[in-house]
Image 1: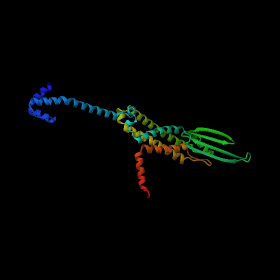
Image 2 (image 1 turned 90 degrees about the vertical axis):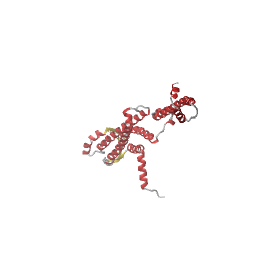
Image 3 (image 1 turned 120 degrees about the horizontal axis):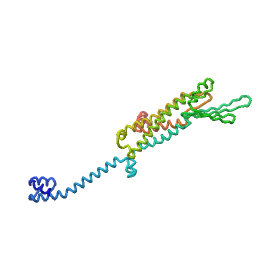
Image 4 (image 1 turned 180 degrees about the vertical axis):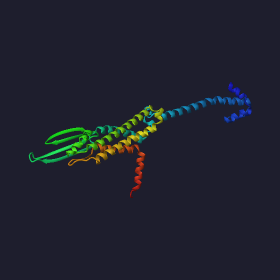
Length: 301
């Protein structure tokens, strides 16, 4: 009724303008125009409401799908409903693998190794072969000596070995520089622990955001900065630790003849893994460097 009264107050010219805007015929008397316009309003209003509601629902659904955390999206619609960045997935996979390797590295006794074997003849017991093997970890050193079929094993910390190194040097019995190895081990240990902390933060933060735990507040606002710093610390720390250990232990460790040795298997594994880790995390820069070097050495056809 209110709608009809409202149309009654309009002039014929105003009614025709409304009918024209609605795409309806403008012929007829005022009563016919009002009836035609009123009928159109009744029919069109529900349709308009439905269209607006449908648009709102679709928009809301799109917004919800776009903002749904990664793991919750997988739970709701499976892997097909999420877009996976292969390099990012590879980075987190490598980070988890590095975390395991760093734990192993902290307890490994093959960062550095040395051995010797010599034959002595005292004229009484005849030729006698003496062999010694040293395995060095980040904080300890193991020594195994074999003589006349008997083996003797001894283990001590590198710090204790370094303390007795001066006395051994005075007696001419210091076969290896425990001080240098102790310094290298301490530096590498600190770098490994720092890298482990950064990786744990990365994995915790990533898994938490995947379940929507850190999706609001300051952590959400600073998420990019947190990830950037964590990746940088994780990559640089382990690469720096491996490099410094290699320099100190590999080039600054003195050994007395006939002892021979060098960097152990754990160092080589960690060194190669740390480079691979950096290449995967910073894949874009790695590819830029690769193509830059490739352009300087054009292939011959």
